[in-house]
Image (cartoon, rainbow, N blue to C red; front, side, top):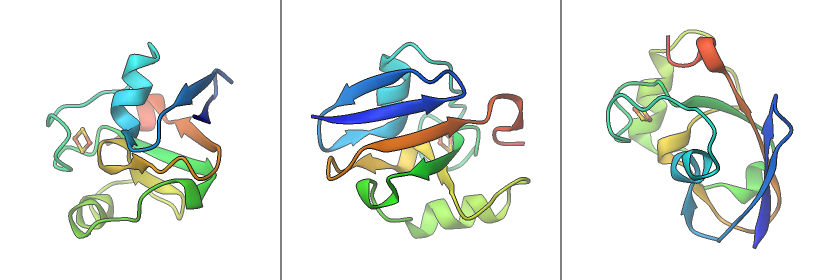
Length: 102
Ligand code: FES
């Protein structure tokens, strides 16, 4: 078990290695929009991985292509639906709310 911290709420959760980031966030009771069912098509699940980037899976070509089409993307941007939590180190994710996916 490793720790996932969500910002701006500051809530912290435990997760199992191999868990999907979007599903983990939703299971924790946080709000994160998923309009495409988690297949890297809508961009609504855009988040920033602020800490623990070695604790998440690498960017996929589909994810990279979708991120290229979004506004407000930075070096820490990821699509939560495409991220696997590796369990190798704690991870901190910023939920972007109204900025997400548009
Ligand atoms: S849920 Fe649509 S891109 Fe992640």
